[in-house]
Amino acid sequence: MNNTKSFASDNWAPVCPQVMEALIKANKGHADAYGNDHYTEKALKIVKQLFGEKTKAYFVYNGTAANILSLAAGTQSFNAVICSEHAHINVDECGAPEKFASIKLIDLPTDDGKLRIAQLEEVISVLRYPHQVVPNIISISQPTELGTLYSVDEIKNLAEFAHQHNAYLHIDGARIANAVVALHSDFKTMITKAGVDILSFGGTKNGLMFGEAVVILNPLLQQNFPLLRKQAMQLASKMRYISVQFIALLENDLWRRNAQQANDMAFLLAKRLSKFPQIKFTQIVETNGLWLIIPDDMAEKLLKQSFFHSWNPQKKEYRIMTSFDTTEKEVERFVAALEE
Ligand SMILES: Cc1ncc(COP(=O)(O)O)c(C=O)c1O
Image 1: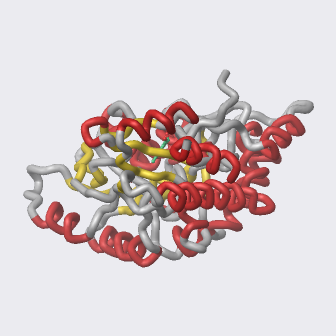
Image 2: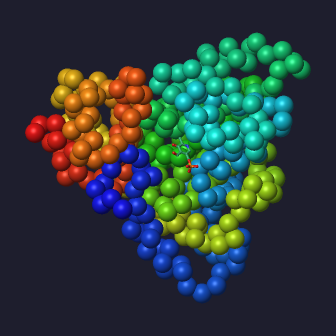
Image 3: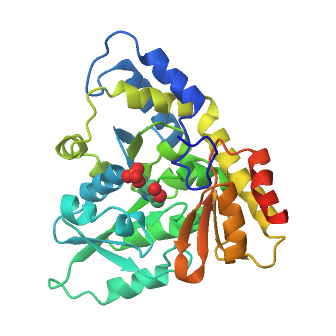
């Protein structure tokens, strides 16, 4: 194991200490299985407080499952999901939407990871019924896979557009905490009041060992969800170990502090790196990721200090990510490699 922290991804980070402590504390005695335990009851109550009383939430193991189940909840085999070309569901889930939800993805080009209403209109306006699949979910990621953000108004407009076209709005919120913190918002404003129908609510990148939730705001999508989750092999029998993690994260705003730290460290890193004119940012830094073109000699120096991923080798573009446990000292040491 490598003790040097990387800038590879927020899921390279360890479990947040408070979460680990909660896991250990919960590891006593027996508890009802399959989510009928008091930890799950408490965790779901907290989710309702954050998103609103009508919300229903279901814990699953990982983000891919949260996404696929969200899509499956709203689609039939003749439906399609519109998403960005960079969407995790499109490029990082090994065809799971097609295999497990039997749906076609319509992926649209975008330079910053965001979908625009004009693009959606273009797709929807040319459909020939009954010859073509019917798109009935618009899936966006907040933040996007390129670290960029939709404003709350943009989410509202997308939700309105979706509803006008008999579609649902799904958000892949693997890093939703980073988005809420960056926009000085809260879950009710960004998700519930904005009109989002279903959310993949990320926990892992915010400090959990594992565990995500599907948060369902639209009652139409809630009906068969327990069955869908079981069928999809995502009903944890020892559910308490996901639930206690969420309690630790959501109680006392730990989610907010973790996300804030990750974002702040990305902003600090961006500030330091922007002093080098040879480095070109390819995306604006709005959350905890930096996308940038780094000349070979500089990339080599930085990579000697800490690992981070190449994003587009042809363009010499890299992705650098911070996490809840990144410190100022680590950022300064990383950048100091360029000054040597
Ligand atoms: C945008 C986005 N969605 C979802 C996920 C969840 O992926 P996993 O199934 O690996 O938990 C990730 C993880 O990298 C992600 O970046």
